[in-house]
Image 1 (cartoon, one colour):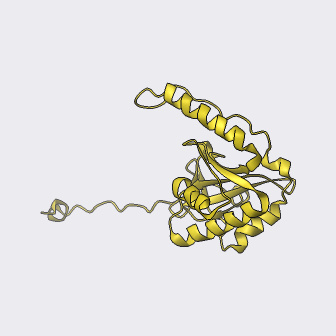
Image 2: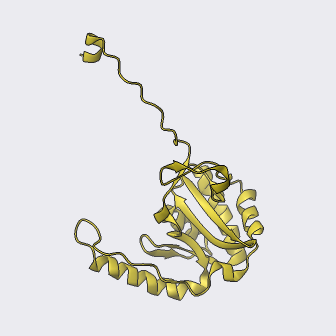
Image 3: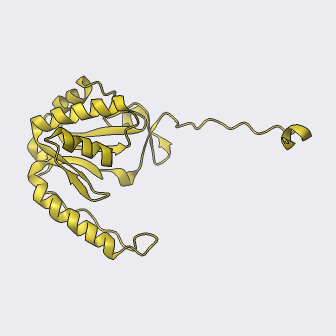
Amino acid sequence: MNLRKLFGIKSKGKEPYEFANFLHMWDDDHLMVELIPKENLGFIKTESKRIDNFGKEHFNGNGFAEITEIGEIQIKTLDKEIDFNSVSSIFNKNGMKRIEKVAFEGKALTEENIPFGFGSNKFAVLLENENDKLKYIWTTGRIENEELRNKFENAVSEFVKKYNFIAVDWYKPEYFELRTENGIKEFIKNSC
C-alpha cells in the first residue's frame, strides 16, 4: 500500500546532482597513478617495496595509523624535455576527447582552472605543462567503456614507443611495463 498516495502526501522532487556529468578529482589523487621515465624502474621497485612494508606495519585493522610520502624519482619527466604539444597530439589523434567539466573537491572548476587532459567524466589522462615541456602525465578515475579503453590503450602504446615510459600505481603499490600490449592491458585493468 502506498501511504503517500493514500494520505495525499507529495514527495519532494529530488534535484538532479549538479556535477553528474563532471570528472571528479581529489587532491589526494594527484600523481598516484602516473607514467614516468623507465630509467626510474630501480627506484620504483625499491620504493614500492618500502611503501608496501610501511603500510603493513602501520595498518591497525581499520585503517592506517601513519602515512608516508613517496620519495623523489631520480629522472623526472620534465628532465626528458618532451614537447608538451607532441604528447597532447598523441591522445587527441587517437580519438580521446578533451575534458571540459571538472569538479575538484566537490566544487566546479572554472574553464581557466580545468586541468589539461583527455577522457570522460569517469576517467582522464592528465598532462601537466611547464614551459611547453611535459612535466607530469597521470590518470584519475576508471575507464567506463570499451571504446575509451581502446582509445587510451592505443594512445599509451604510441606514447610509450616514442618516449619509453612505465606506469606506477602508488595506491597498490605496483608498476607496469608498457612496452607490450599485455603490459598496457594489465595497467588499464588494474589501475584505470
